[in-house]
Length: 67
Image 1 (cartoon, rainbow, N blue to C red):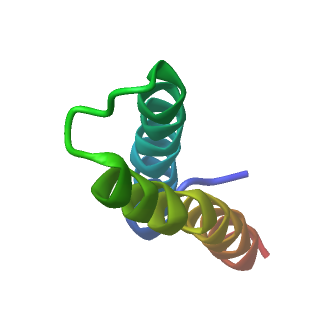
Image 2: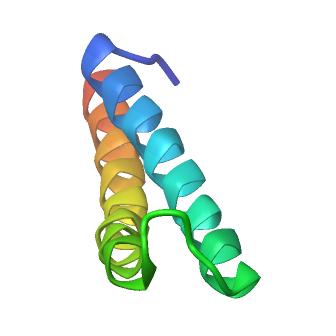
């Protein structure tokens, strides 16, 4: 399967969003988030679905360019 620049960017975005989501989970479970509970919860709520969306877009783009 060939990676294109577009699919690479989607995959990179997926990785960054996944790291942000995991970091937010650790911050929220520590009991005292550095940026506050509300801001950390918002970041988690945005980054978790963004991880999945970017990953699916990367796979779809790589498959489209492979055929």
